[in-house]
Amino acid sequence: MKYLIVILIFCAQIGKSQTFSYPALNKQGKDIAALVPLRWKAIDTALGDLNNDKIEDLAIIYEYNLPISENRAYGDNETDLIKEFQRPRVLAIYFKNLQSGKYTLATQNNNFILRANEGGSLGDPLKNISIAANKLLLQFEGGANWRWKLNYEFKYQNKDWNLVNANNIYYNAMSGEMTNRQYNFLARRMRLISGNLADQEGNNLIDEETLIFTSFKTFATFKKPWTWEISKDNFL
Image (cartoon, rainbow, N blue to C red):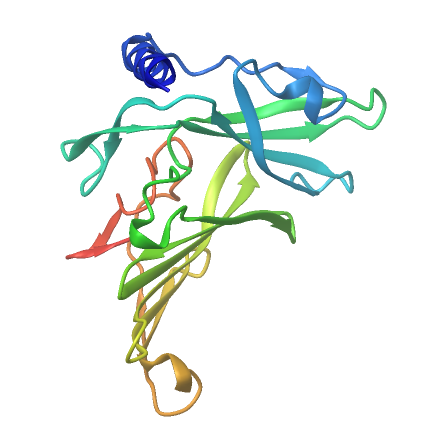
């Protein structure tokens, strides 16, 4: 038993001291097994048409097999950085070529996907990745007594991944008190529902306002959840 403890401590120290770099993903592959990089695993996948060519494309979330020290953005996306010891995650999106039958890497993002310990007392915040209506849907959930749900929809437009819809629900698990912000960036509108989870279509207050922004957020400009201050003290 004593030797096992020593080995575990030794392995943990190696994990902390190793120089880490995100993988250069394979540009092409016939299936998921051919795409997964060494020392990484696919923890979630989704199939569906993303570039409107009627062919099923592929999205994968990879997770590294060891925890490492990462600087993760919070607050304003640039200055509020917190160092955390956790397993990195990577989002990869592939377009499928019907003739070759291979998946070709369309984008790789090393930051946007929340890590397993970024969900508070509820545990892993990653709930689902899916593809519907030519859009990539990412769903996260976390918190404690006060909980949050974050849903993001990215669409491939003009050779980039634009955030076209989002949903931020913040609620109390005991009382049901909640605010539900629904964003439609194509229409530049935000719908705010406030009241109680049990009465979403009843006596809740509903308000709408115009969204003012210069350009769509993309994977390149939206670092990760909770880093876009859309309005004062209102983060998405």
